[in-house]
Length: 113
Image (cartoon, helix red, strand yellow):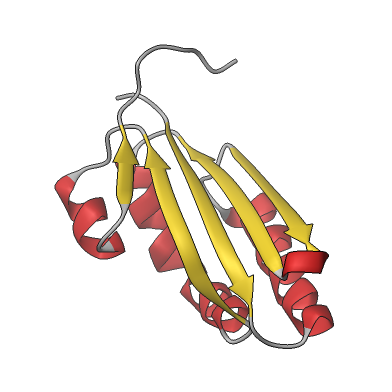
């Protein structure tokens, strides 16, 4: 299977500091325990938008992340709403069902070191 990259754009609706704290806790947890190969979060304070990029080995890693990290995800979502989620790659039907209406961009070529 090819890797799957998620780009989640979140509109920050609550307190920015509370959002930052929740995201920092979540990223710290998945760095220690999660299956992601990479996680990067960028915050555009002026527009109250955050961009999260998460790279997974495959769909099974995404499913494992959801089970493992749900409490952290719920805490982050108290302070934001999803503006757009784009999935780059070819996720399984189970992942697509769990995500819902999302834009999927199939992989053409590339590599991960």
